[in-house]
Length: 100
Image (cartoon, rainbow, N blue to C red):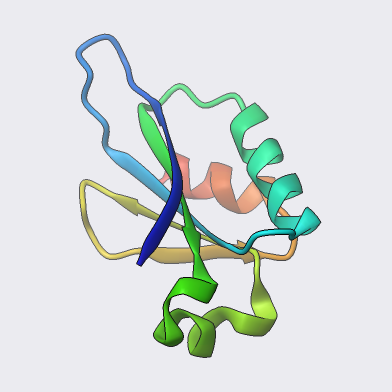
């Protein structure tokens, strides 16, 4: 897995409990748009956004190739859940965040 970038948004004690993974590729304007929209989304929970280059891993290409960009999320290192692809689904992100 090739990590392109990691953005951390921690609360006061530095605990990060929400992990977003954006499966992306270089020269992908939809990927850039989804990252910008997710970064601009006002979230009170501490979280990270990891941008993963699907083209660096054959298994990721096989899984996500035609769907890129794909956004998944996990809580407290639990299993990841796919939230959306192509465009940010703000309602799906907010529903995930609200589901404690």
